[in-house]
Length: 66
Image (cartoon, rainbow, N blue to C red; front, top):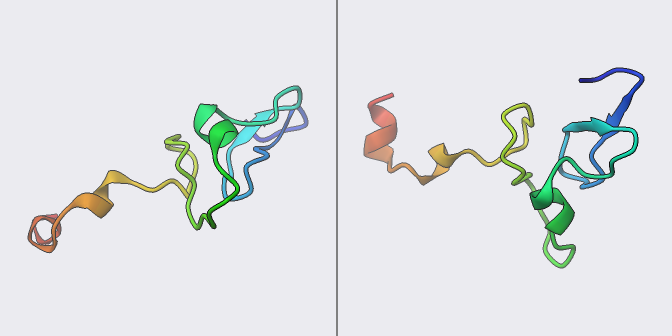
């Protein structure tokens, strides 16, 4: 979606593109609090490289199976 009709999401940790008439890529970024420091985006969009993936919830034994 990156072209002249888009810009980056206003939520600083997010790298998603949004239409020029939008500010955020979705509810998660719109509702993101500014009280905590965020090192990853939680928008859930697969295109966002900063999205926390569910793989972080696997145990070391489960990861060894990958």
